[in-house]
Amino acid sequence: MTLFDTVVLSAAYFPPVEYFFAIARSGHVLVEQNELYQKQSYRNRCRIFSAGGVMQLSIPVIKDGVHARPIRDIRIDYSEPWIRLHVRAMDAAYNSSPFYLYYKDDFAEIIGRKPEFLFDLDIALTEKLLELAGIKADISFTETFRTDWGEGDFRTRIQPKYHGESLLDEYGLNREYYQVFSSRFGFQPNLSILDLLCHEGPESSSFLL
Image 1: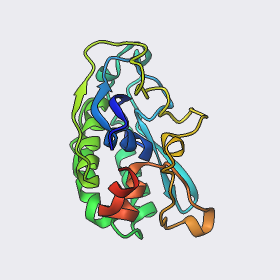
Image 2 (image 1 turned 180 degrees about the horizontal axis):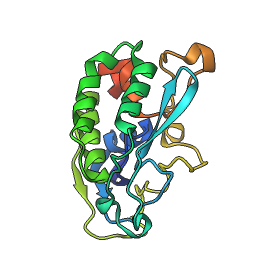
Image 3 (image 1 turned 60 degrees about the vertical axis):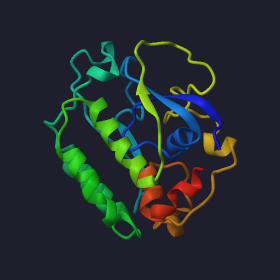
């Protein structure tokens, strides 16, 4: 069922489940490529469920003038060993999940290309995640920056610092599913779509549609 004619989203690294809910329930998706970079956002970070609880992974970016540049021009800093750290963290978090082994090579291949720009990495991963989740999407990119696109503009709502209810809560879809470490910490909602895919595999779309 389509809820939104168009949704506007910021690019994101292994985005949260609600990000894919917005895509799955929209007729058209606009990904913002002209906004200025913002730190501590999903543009370069994600949240996974590890043996120690919820864990945040962050991609370092080259900081020279970073806050004065549009997201499309932000370069990734490969001088830090973040790829190795992220792959190890994901392996540790999801090796025991039912479906991680089916997907890990897809993600490792995309990250291993070492794209120069953060935006390109985000989009490549998002397209693969949509494919694996069985979600078809009509995606295009903003041509100019606008502060408000009206209903369906979730650029500021789908962010780590947003303290209101998630889209999943609003639409009654914040359903629990099996998580490897839930017996220790309880169910953790709205993590990276990676968490849902690793535990539910081909059934992931049923949590979004």
